[in-house]
Length: 446
Image (cartoon, rainbow, N blue to C red; front, top):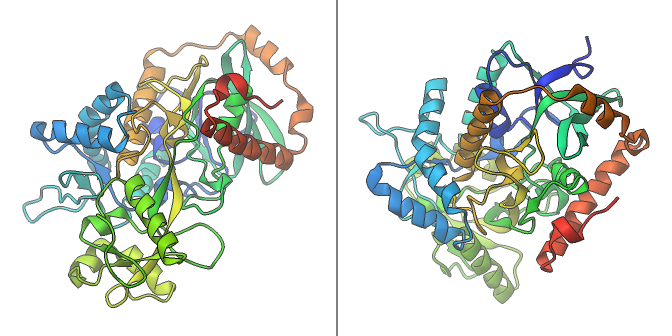
């Protein structure tokens, strides 16, 4: 039977850590469909290098809270920050129980690293591939669930809604080109960021913000869509395609940023937006397309143990990090804005949830503190799953039929054009927000 030609209790769009953890925490008696636009591992969660924050102890709370608020320019939602920090030990515990292997000290306690904006080391990590370790572990657990169907290469083209209530999605089977109306009692958007809509980015190219455009079309509130974080250090390359991130943990372990004359020019452990601005200013001053990152003075055994993927990738590009500086340049990295959601993932549309990078619950403010992203995505995705499970009800089938009947089939006949329109719509909305316009009132493209 065709997997897309069925009704589900819950549809989850996205297979990053948010989507997977949501599926993992839904009741086992609920039938769940999880889709992704490309391969299951083509998500930014898989690429996350640095790590995931954890409240070390009660004495760490105040400094962790202040570090997050300060990095976010105090535009954060304090309730969201508090919830994230207090839930961090629970999240790490869940991951360890699933089999995630974090670095440890000789006595078996967590080994913590430090990144920009953090006053103390509080970041759990697995080499320089923490996201891959977590994502693959979650994926392994989800694949064991008999109530969850995972399917690749399916693209969400729209949501099905009537009177501000969601009844499922319109989905494209990328292989066959067939379009389906997939019905569900609840829909969860976990579609990631929007870097793919722009040029120089560390994101997968498929992440263009489709869900944001769809929400704008249907009057679902979207906040701070212009709050896009530029990471200070991606590996400079003349090749086209996604930029390779050089983890902030490298600077956390002592790497220096150098100008064209190999002189330090900034405090490498300031928040990301501050360091990014310093790098751009230095590039302009020097008339260069990059600055240098120097890790030669860091013990070789530490580099080899903590950053094997970075060592390997730099070697592929012709750089030996043990003996050479490497060229780095800022790149679009993380989206702090998104679909408005509360601390349970609820959007402004009934039965529609948003979790992970695609949502905005205010936890990051104007600038994300390093290594809060995996934590935020995992925690609030679990909270969304628990909220769906605890209050689960069926949709009104009569209203659902009316919602289906109102769909305009012409809209989906040329999916490539529709997706291109979504991409342009997102870029226009970002520009409008940069100009101070309220996109939820002034921006809509029919």
